[in-house]
Image (cartoon, rainbow, N blue to C red; front, side, top):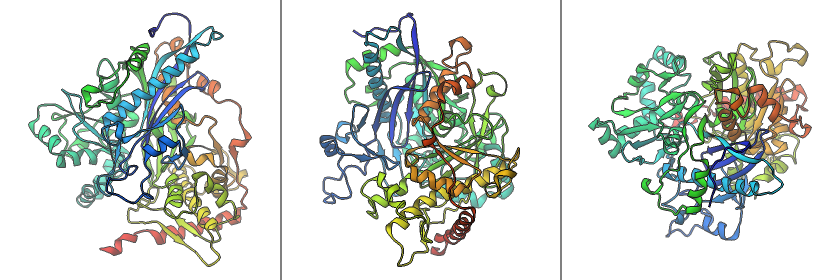
Length: 630
């Protein structure tokens, strides 16, 4: 029999549910950021199981076989993982088809109920671990979950029925590009003054990236959703992943979205932090026909945890009675922190002071630059987004904080491509040693624009291009040029952000002794799969130059930690909080600086400037590659 919460003295723990593009995890954090328990489920995909009639065994790696033989499988970041007590891989045969689906070229769908079920199962596994820890007789004061936070992939669009709670289609993920024609049409018919007005309100360009075009596509093309919309009976509910999870995990069925997620829909005005009628009209969305979640802060009481009835949602895999029993131990615990994944990483990296920045090297690469309470609209190719909003804190810390954001489409996935397509390496971890066999790229420049160039270039017509090969070129030169291609884009984004923030666009080129109060950035905090390779971070430091130090996060799960911090700060009474304020967070979590996690430039300035100019020339030549096909 599982005992429910008691009022006995306890050590506070924050639980985080972190839903990513290719996996879901739950982590229990202590006050000092220690992971007490962790469980991750890597999604099954339509690409991970071969069709019955397929004889192409090289293309499809059967996860059921991997599960039997405990062989490694690779995450979206190119990191090899094996099944352990902490990580499991979905077996398609054990669920109603795969969680991540690729029905057509450019289409990427997720199954919302599977994601919810994965979140519940990860949480159960963590609670079982916590129970084992608490059974240690030497532990006089037991751990107790005090709050729950949520971090999630942003922009992913889900529509469900108000009466049943069931999704009416697969969720359209942020990487899905099926809405290209919608965006191209709007680009053609919208004059520049209107585009500028839209960007002032949203901080965003017109792009397939954001939720608005995905919802518009569903209303136009999904029969079930279109019919309900036309009926106008108010049964449709729209939300991003945070809304979907909070709605189904709270006793109150709370229907909300935090500002960091809402700011990525293209429906929210950054100033008012609410829906804007003109934006809804632009996308021809009638809010009387489809419910939009209330926009709330990143750190407040959303609702009390309650186990969802997965069978009622059409998920019939057996959730054991033990699992439901242990979930009762956190019944009523507040869900009270929520951040979109990149904002969560900003907070988890402790980049909470204006002028601080973080870079996450995942499947793609995401940079956020904290601009504090100032909303800066970029004129140099980056986006403006909400960084976080912790209203319980005093002074400026309690006000909404904005960020400039730049994203790179291809980062960790370039490692996968080198491994799976070119067969240059057998394992993702081999990329660093291969690239380090040479001291430079031998004149090779690799533009990894497999799906176009994102910030600050925004050229959808670019494609992956390799320049400068000779008979001297080896696999090591190509590998190094590929890594440099990611790092050069990071530099380009930081230059754009510096100029938007009022600093010198050329601050990376200026001598250290000229940098005083005008230096917009002195340290780049990094995390994500590729950041585990020292070789990658040294290349990044060399390309950025001596003005910026690259510092790897001591705690690897920064995204989940950020959501935990949001939840731990949410209580109105300071004495009830897990951390009193952001200074307390930094003091308890930051720890000692580790020289092994700090990287500074070693490349001479003259060499760095030379390779940067070569990169810029290569980008110019790669742009508009598809335009000649017309």
